[in-house]
Amino acid sequence: MRPPPGRQQLSREFITRHQRARIIAALAEEVMAQGYRAVTVADIVSRAGIARNTFYENFSSKEDCFLAAQEYAVDEALRRVVEAASDVESWPARVRSGLASFLRSVATEPALARTCFVDALSAGPAAVDRYEQSLQAFVPLFRIGRKVSPHGEELPSTLEETIVGGIFWIIYQRIVLGQTEQIEELLPELIEFALTPYVGAEAARRAATEG
Amino acid sequence: MAVDPSDSSVEAAHEYPPELSRLPPGRHGLPREFVVHNQRERLIAGLAEAVAENGFASTTIAHITRHAAVSRRTFYEHFSSKDECFVAAYDAVLEQLGERVGEAFRAEQEWPQAIRAGIAAMLSFLAHEPNLARLCMVEALVAGPVVVERYDAAIQSLVPYFREGRKGRPPEVLSRLSPTTEEALVGGMVSLVSRRIFAGRTAELEELLPDLVEFALTPYLGSAEAAKAARQG
View (cartoon, each protein chain N blue to C red):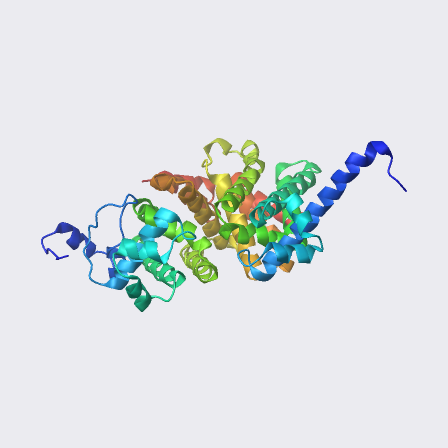
């Protein structure tokens, strides 16, 4: 069936999006298999089952594709986190849902997670920049906690960066150790770690064990 | 180059292990302050300078030998590759940093003060040695799997200092500390410090002391006590 004329444009957009996602997935798998430096465009093309031309219609280089993979993964994870957190009322419960969603993203997309958490650090300055931005993107979600904290105004200004850095480090470690499948088990510990400075250890523990 | 024993810079160099006594303090290609005979040490110092100038990925063996003022052949008498030279430099820096932190920590009686002293020692070392700070916190990640393993191990080596904080805590505090508390604390602190170095703000690192102390002590002492310990100079 031919698509109606008005939808032609949309349809091409969809195909392009789909192609990009497929190439990104192929890149992530190749990076996981052999490390960023060793991967070639030919490897990505062959894994994605597309023509070399198609790759270059979407990306200018391997690096460009890598940066797109980072952007895609972070946008997607952040979108899911915000969506998961919007379902619940209290801030501690939102942190809980958001973190749960984040860990699930890592567990279900191990190759993409490895690309973002491990390989990004050694894939050149632009990739490291993007890694920094992704860390920073989560900072405002925690900063909200200052409003519910009895001593919110006195908390150190770097607190959120340090919390996100700590969570990223724990995830990095588990990925390097090949333990992404069990990563969701860390949820209660990470909730407590993130909430304790804001609401105290007792309330953090309650938020971590409920639900 | 002759060694003048009355030269104070040579004396200052005795405080450092030989590998580090040659490492340059600034990143502006200052004239060599320390006279060194050992070629290996010169190469390690040359690598630190070259990496500070070019980044690890773009550093070539020619850069290293030029900074070290030795021949290419001499380089290969000591190291088989740029990677191997980097690992040697990395180990030298980490050993020095580890010693400083350990000494500062052990000099204090009380654990909260010991943590504060250890963090202060780390920040001070990194702030005063921007080339080395960059080498061990930023470039290490670029340098490939061998160094990344060492980097991970170095961060993990800080965990026991924090775990000490569990000793003598009441059961309700112990019960709420999770197995990964220390790892997350250390990871968060290192991440913050690395980000500042990456952003070229190494000189401001010591300003992070109160924030990091409060962050590190909160799980053990609670927010109020931790904030108090952080503000005490």
